[in-house]
Figure 1 (cartoon, rainbow, N blue to C red):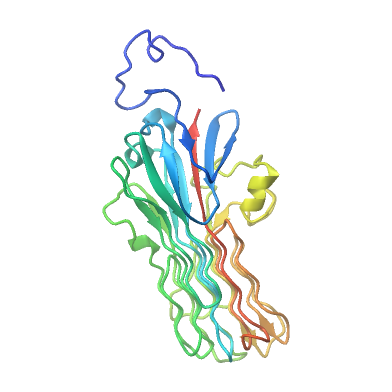
Figure 2: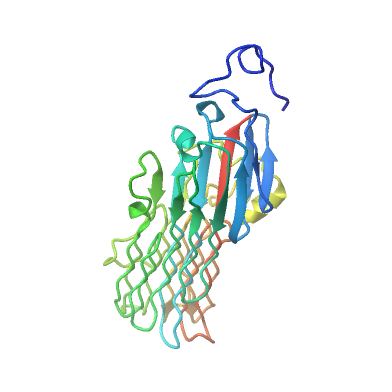
Amino acid sequence: MAPIFTGGRMGFGRVDEPSGGSVGGPLVVTGANIVSYSNDTYSYALIFSTGSSPVTFNRGFTVADEVEMLLVAGGGGGGSSNWGATGGGGGGGVVWVPSSKGPQIVTSPVTVQLTVGSGGPIGADGGDTVLGSASGVISLAAKGGGRGGNGASAGASGGSGGGGQFDGSLGGPGSQPSQNPGIPGIQQFGYPGFRGDPSPDLSGGAGGGAGGGGPTNTHNTNGGAGVNIYPLSPTFIDTSFPGTIITNLGGYPSASPHFYYFGAGGGGGTRLANTARPGGQGGGGYGGSDPGSPAGAGADGKGAGGGGGAESSTQKPSARGGSGCVIIRWKK
């Protein structure tokens, strides 16, 4: 959309607006790994490529930009084991920056490193998603999901915690709410994983999700749900996103119950039962079962945890977690 020329903002009057307006022209966000999208009202910069890359903001954010940001870490992998059912991976931690906070995140033109966390391999935590530190930027970090418990161990701590091994091992704590200390105005999501349970069917605990999970000493094989972005900003995840973006966000159509959810936990693995345990809403991998099938992977772009395995690493193994993402939206 072309800029609207008004007397106060395009050279015909004052331009020293401290709290809004198009000071310095329209906001532009550029970078090699950015997927750009716009609709009639908003522009988006979406980053799905894992690892670190530079992102450039041509100026600081203003109130009028209505900048909102979503940072999602990678989901944890299901627990690795040569015997027994393992815990599901925890969902990646989720950080939400509302438009009221946006003007404080970037206050001047800057190029900053932005890292998108990868999904954790089997037996490993998910990667962190980080808006790096630089002059004029408040650094933000979403913590990777904890791996599922394995080898008679508890689930690992993470953005959301992993589920415990089948022998009764505890779930891991959800650490995302304690991240980014001293930064008021943002919202952070991450819950604990569930403990494993040897009866009645030797089940690993499910991973916690960004929308629910735990406490760590309670047992559940169904993955914790991801956090629903719709109540935070109903139009932020656009139902008209093109197919390439939908694919990068887990591949779920807008009618799917998974569409608006991020950071789901993986289901726990189960022996002596032939029904896979579902992952959390938002693409959490299902837990493997024996008899039955291996576990399912967490959805990429959603930061979903991988499912726990039901048996040895070669028979009914666990699955990896899904990668995270960063989405930045601002008003045209």
